[in-house]
Image 1 (spheres, one colour):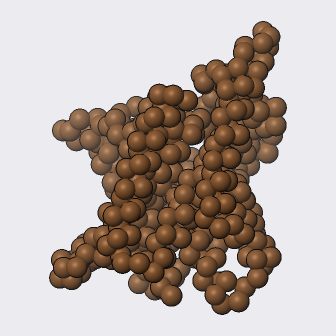
Image 2 (tube, helix red, strand yellow):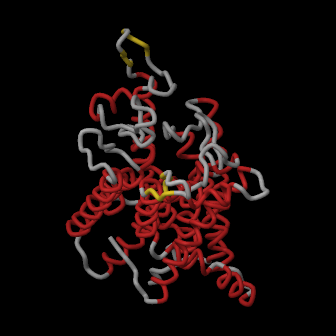
Image 3 (cartoon, helix red, strand yellow):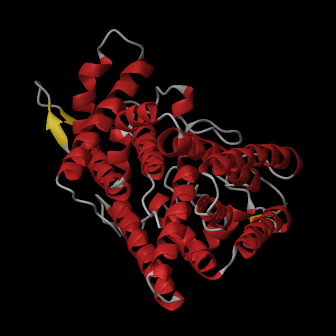
Length: 381
């Protein structure tokens, strides 16, 4: 059975490269609109990146579980390995949040890696133990439970009852749960709510489960061209349903990870992955397909060590922010500002200068990933 799909590595590489690009601008005050999150409801290119990564995690999980079952692994051992992997990823996320202050009293507990870990905790047993109908049922159940809590749970603040169904920053049911369970350990930019909070992990896990469903279909012994068509149609259907939920249930909102957002981004994930799949693994014109494979090599290099590169980029970004260097007058500046200063003086717009810094950061990380690729160093968790 084929367990390594080039288009999956390339899609993963595209996603991690996008993460690095949007997470490391030269100046957060000057961003091109697609490289910034939507201010609240709505979406941009940047809002696609995280659900893409969860979707990819679901594909990889199902392929790995299926291969190990064929090799004779029992469900119990697979469950243990899945939860162990989730624990390691969660601890890596906490480590990144601890650096550089190592202050446990203000440590932010949620985070990107923590959400990936919690989604793995939820999705792992479902992928290992359930058939596709049961997996689809779990997706519907998780979205329904989230919706009921968000729309029906009465939220209180210091002034009394606010009511239910409020979808405003810090006033929704999810943020109330986070303040009860994680008070003092939330996102420092908001304090009262967290974009990777506990309740919104339920619909986020659905993106991972959707990836697992896509992988199950991808491994079906039917013609690759047929699979391509059905995956594309499924993506378009998810876009339609996501837009419908945006109008009928809750708006598309990344910070709340609403059902409309989860379904809508599953649609874009399906369309993007299937495009890579067709171009790199299915296209009948072999000469063109080989040319595209060569052109996609940098993304493949990113993709085979995606988690390591993400963690390393987080450490490097923190170093740039917290290590200081003196200028000619002896005044201290962060290493980030010292490197960015010459770019900011270029005869280009502030947005272009900021983007140029992010692209240079991306190239540095590509150099590291390429060196690991050449030495065949693949870091797995």
